[in-house]
Image 1: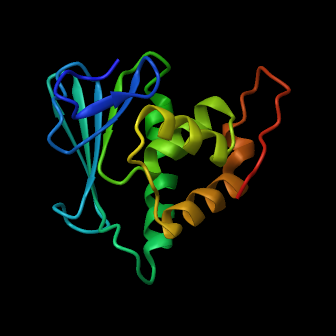
Image 2: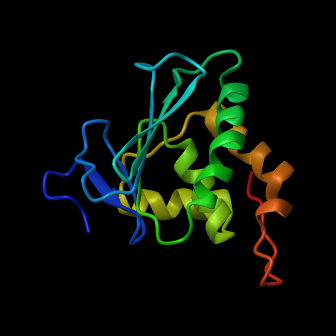
Length: 158
């Protein structure tokens, strides 16, 4: 289920990963991470029923990147989870938030999620800082996100 012009790819029936210039007409939430926005800020706006979350992040490897990514993950994941399980979400820019979100909703580990995404959209390659931030988030927050209706335990491959 890829958009005809190839600017985004559905990873699941309701979650897509794409380019900043992807068409977003069919999505309820757009999470756009880019250095075009004020760095380390999260700006949420609405356009009708659509929620647009703009996150300022320069994902060029460097000192402190992992801390900034971790902060963004910790801030955004609860907001996305509150929106429910039928919400269609487009993630653009840095892929860290999409990976963390998929971990939170599926219970799969980091390696499984990366492998799954790469099969659908092969251009995905998180930076080491992103990888470490996601793994630290998983290890510190996973009990909160573990589904209450199942005895399934999350596994870690970080």
